[in-house]
Length: 264
Ligand code: FAD
Image: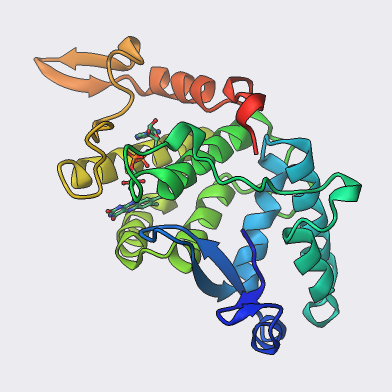
């Protein structure tokens, strides 16, 4: 959520100065009971908003993101209407049918207690959805400059995690994984699978640690219950059938599988 406000309150002179200097404040909820604010470069925030073209969300949110994108992309920084952006993200433009939800409800990422799941779980989910959208709708990023780049979603995620995620340790690990293997991704399907593989790597590292919700143990995903055909055995050793995993991911994270009832 772009706040464009300084730590001392919305629309402060300090926040405006930061903005004019190319920095934006974003609200993050990781490891905080109440939201924290994180500052990062507007250029990296812009790349994140460009992915709105892939976001299969509610019309009111998509419209809001499109407007924000139009301002961020088409105007030079000093001409971006700061007050208008504040109005936009603070839901004062409801009249034009653009608004963010007032409620913060992690529908598919409900933790068994406060501080578990929630925001980081939703961020993984969002990026899985976006990689699947990029693979399923090749024209969605037309005229954004990203249409020829099969790694566009992953590169944006990489910048977002490093700058705005709020967990430095997570950012460091993610960056290490990206340095080691992101260059090998050559197609949008490989991008979907790369994120799945890396998420499982993180699950493996975090299993049994304090960040694990006991009601949602960290396992190698999808389990045989969720996708029996994803699992095979070769010479007595478990192997993934990656073609089947890809099919499963495209179905599970596909737009048709997102309930409009809970889409904010
Ligand atoms: P999550 O791991 O958040 O997964 C969300 C949902 O995605 C699951 O419920 C499941 O439905 C689905 N899913 C699970 N695995 C996969 C997969 N392989 N492919 C596709 N879908 C899957 N926390 C730390 O403590 N240390 C870290 O270093 C760290 N690094 C992180 C790096 C990133 C990029 C992100 C986004 C988060 C990181 N986190 C880290 C947070 C951590 O990974 C979990 O998000 C958090 O602990 C909540 O876990 P969860 O049980 O809700 O499931």
